[in-house]
Length: 319
Image 1 (cartoon, rainbow, N blue to C red):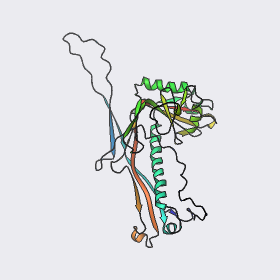
Image 2: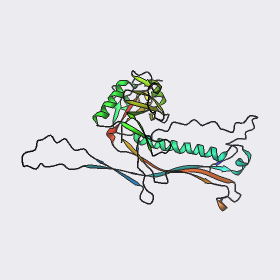
Image 3: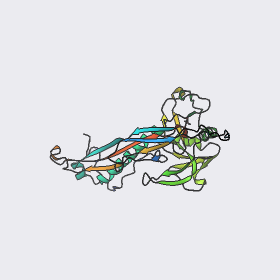
C-alpha cells in the first residue's frame, strides 16, 4: 500500500504560506466533447449496442405501367462494445493530517478529479484516433515515410474536408456540456479539428488561419482558431506517435471530426464517484486508526460508430 506521509507532503514552515496550493498543470480534456452519450441503466448489462441503417440507393429507373418493382431491402450494421471500470486512490496517514496545514481532503479530491478526467480523456482519444480513414501529409504513403518537412497545410485540411464531404458526413452542430458531461450545447455548424500545441504553432502560419479572437459566436472549450469550415481546439493530450516517422521523428495525429463519428457510454448512476474512507473505517486492518483513503471509480467506454466520419491527418511539426 502506497501511503502518503509527511515525506511526500512536507511541513509548511514558511513565514508566508499560501494555503491555496498552486494549480497543477493539467491538459485540456476535450476528446469526449463531440460524441453521442448513451448510458446503460443499472442492473441490465455492461454491453452497449449501436445500430446504423444503411442508406438506400437512388431509385432512378422509371416504373413500368402495371409492373411492381422488385423493391429494396434494409441493411443494418450493429456496433458493440463493453463498459469497463477504472479507478485509483491515495492513502493518507493520521500523522500527515495532524501536522500539515493543507486542506488534505479538498486538495486530494481535486487531484483525483483531474486524474479521473485525464484518464477518460485519454481512453477516448486512443479509441477515436484509431479510425481507419487516414491521410498522410504531402507525398507520404505511410507513417514511416513522413519527413520533418511534411507539416500540416491548408491543402491538407481541405483534402480532409473533401473526404468527409465525399462520405456524406455532416458538420457538427452541438457539443457535450463541460458542466454536466451529458447535456449538449449548440455550436455553429463546422468540422472540428483536435491538435497538439506543436501543431497549433504551425497552424498559425497556415494561409487562411483565423484566430478565435477574430470571429464571433459561441466558442468551444479550448478553441483556438479556424481554417475554412474547420474549427480547431488544442490539447496537450492530442495524439503523438513518438519516433514513428522517417529518421525516427515524432508524427502528430490531427483528427478532423464530423457528426456521429463516435459515442461514449457509462452505467447510469456510476459514471464517476469520489469514495472517502475515513480513519478507523478499516476495522482490525487499521487497528490504530492510522490511515484514510480517498479515491475515484468510474464506468466508461468509447466506441467509433462510423469510420467514414473522421479523418486522421498524420504529419510532422516544426522543431
